[in-house]
Length: 476
Image (cartoon, rainbow, N blue to C red):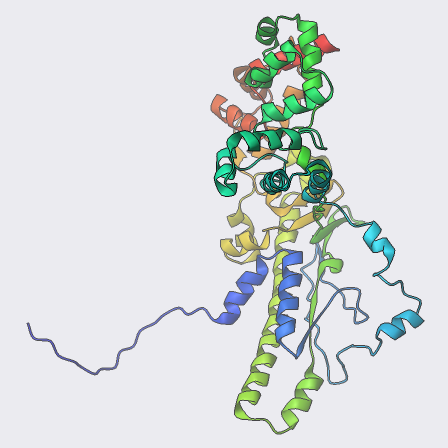
């Protein structure tokens, strides 16, 4: 076989995704907070771009739509020729003249939050006088996880510090006496034991219960009473004491606030009985393009590299403004269709939630299924019934007995939870009994599906529920 080089011309068709399309896809799936962080990061790199919140003076109307009208348009605002950068000249002196409070005062330090490690290190500094023991205590404290449990093996700490296991155990015993009670435990049983000893309640019967925590989790109080040598009334009281203990003592110092879920879309009742859907303008960051600054720069003498940089910045800012605007339109259109499909839920509650899949909404809105998937990712809808993630409205269908209409899986789970909540110790329903009750209500469902939904909702088995209710009734 002979090999040789040839030069030829070929034509072929390919699908190329531009950087602007990639950026649009990325922006669509970002949450409101992530979008704000992304835009401000881009603004730091682009001198022609500015990101402002809805509290800015340059207000624009946010897009909204009712169920009887198409979505309104909302062009992205741009900085015109008369716009400036909006930056004031005030410094520290002007702030003091306006009477603003200085954040560097003593209140800032008095309100400083203490971490778990700082709290324990202060106790260790007052407890250990021997430098070697103090070093071991610091190593133990640094080895704790967020819940306050010892995350390292004692032997590994010995090898790291070059000391004996007996000495580390002695220091560990003293550290476990620190506040909060239960700290530096190596297991849940040890954590509960430390807290019970602190309350002077660790007797032989309680020790036996701690050794058999799996039985307590199953509410097998009869077997526990037999092992501990007490009656059912005493074992119920002991179980109540265990429930009052803190299984994660380190969480008391976990002061990191959980960011609240804020609605991206708001649904309001209209006068005609329908619903009006609008974007939450308070969460919409806006991209302003400073065209005046661009005109001033391009009017001067620039080198080829500088001119290319300025032109690229202008293109990027313009595309980013368009993509942010397109994101708002897509979310609004998808949310409007969801409200249209789930109007019965908004009026009557979860039992009227309809089965809905992504392809149904995508076909109506006129976009790809993946676009709908990105549009509902980490987005929330505020209704008269509360705040819901957009994904909540997309559920599988469960066939009805008469075959006339399918039910949402969320509706079925709601009915299962209602049946379980109505149980007493004598009327606990097995999975088969729940299937029978649901079929009486017109829902055709298999037993394994009931078991799956029960696991999703963290509902114990019928045996565990019966033991739990018997214990609750005996303790009451």
